[in-house]
Length: 455
Image 1 (tube, rainbow, N blue to C red):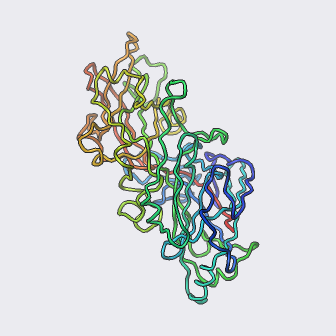
Image 2 (tube, rainbow, N blue to C red):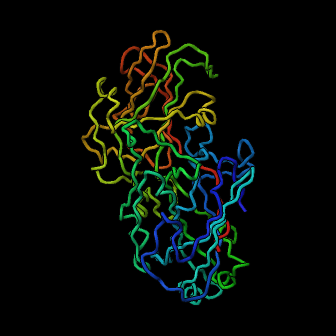
């Protein structure tokens, strides 16, 4: 059993789920019957919500608690998610089983039990798979051969305001590549509420709020046929420990942007220091929809049909880009525009990763500079207040790489899912275009969510 960490909260009460029914009233039902002929196979595996690469052991972790380090060389601390960023709503999950040719065998609708103690959270998923594929594959492989299959997990796509589209599939026909090629999307939550007031979205670990980040993951399993023959309800085949050593790694389908207020600050944060401070942060220019799955099978997009940190974005059609106007004082102060995305004051990131320095964060869908062509590229507007005169100033913060405090190009190439883009503002001049910034990009690692009993 994999140990979990205190940052991940419990999913809630026991969810009684039928093998042939829906996971919940909000979840998709199978499009048709696929038959239950064949020998029942009982499996067990682990779903891990963290980066799939360079995961360090508990003994190697700097604090000894098993937290994972980001792969990015320029990140200076562990980029573990907050409880809300890590949370998987087990009532909003899809489990899809594929054969060796990556064709869908069937969706799986298991029984889920969630428990918690002070050190870890345990998601126990139990289902018996009865499909002729396993019986036939075992016969063909013989006792010394192996049986290959894939399992995909999609989670949190129907959180509040996301309106995630359901994948269309037909057992025996639809492949993993087919699912990715459908380009199914979810909505970036609205920037205004029903009363036209500014709405700032952030995930929540309160189950009733249903505010969780969409995630997906996939893993290939190559299992000895003789082991599949002996499974039972009391003796499941543990795919994560029985010679396979494989988990299913989940990546968030959103990027996170952090703007850290270190203006004129010493190395040690001083909340009482009289200085110019960040009052608010806004993003201008973004995609209002994001793709649920990356372009699976493409270079940089899970080319081997196994979860891997992406190196290129998967964006919906251009019509979902807000196409902003160029930066100006007038536009920056126009808070009535629904195409401005407001950052929230991220007190958890401030405390956990930035030693108390104020942090403003926003969750956004992926972006591709090439896709938007000649349209105005995204930029950030930072409102600062001089403590001496209480006058607000708007500053343009280019969505770009920075060296020696200044932008070095014409904008970053992409915003990638499961990455954090961090801008540390260390100084502000009177000139509207002069902000001194440190810039880093980090893989967004997460701690473990264990689903150890897939039976």
